[in-house]
Amino acid sequence: MADPMRVRATENGGVVDVKILMKHDMETGQRKDAAGKTIPAWHIQTVIATYKGREVFHAQFGPAVSKDPFLNFKFKGGAKGDKVTVTWVDNRGDKRTDEATIA
Amino acid sequence: MRRAFIRATAALAAIGLSARAAAQQAPAGGKSGKGGRVKVVYQLSEGIDQAVRAMANLRNHLNAAPDTKIVVVAFGYGVDFLVEGAKDARGNTFEAAVGALASSGVEFRVCRNTLTARKISEQSLLMDAKIVPAGVVEVARLQFDEGYAYLKP
Image (cartoon, rainbow over all chains, first blue to last red; front, side, top):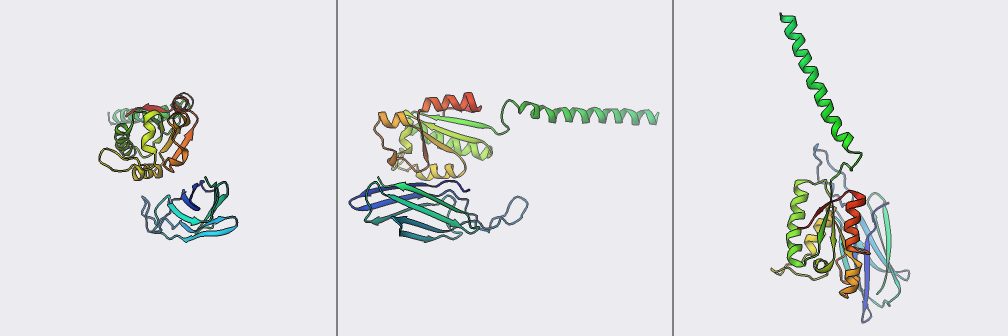
């Protein structure tokens, strides 16, 4: 199981500000180890955020995204006390889902 | 004459081998008391200037000994640099430095008592910060129970 991500959501004037810190090595497939062998690519490919079952954010990540990616986005129409759920899937099929209560 | 010389060198070689074997066993035997990996707790409780020094110390520490497990415990004024938007004397924020250190395995633990006493909300802290019930207890616990070395930059 992958490491948990940190999700923080705050509502202000009907707009919810979501901050996500994912824990992932994001190997590009370009790096080599000490023995000169290529380290295979291993990175997040999709990130989806949902609010009340509705998709509010969808991203496709590639090898150019940094290790431990940080993501910040806003969406309209969220209310305090509700939950935002975030899921990522990487190119090995590993998944991680975490949620945060809007404050 | 020649045979005696060979015997002598063989005996010397044997002494050398056993000495080396003993040297290899010594750290293995010592490992039972402490883990193989060096663990260090940094206490930050004096504000921004100390935090700036600590960032450099932490980077140098990891450069010189990448395997070290480092935990930073922040309480009192040492919490300031982990608040979003905090700046050092030159006007640089700490977010990038903290983020890079966190990526290389440094943990940042913040004292809840401090947050309550100084009315700092959990939401205003950087995402890399984790919250522990009490900073002083955490520093003591890491040293006493988990064998961490103590550093205060």
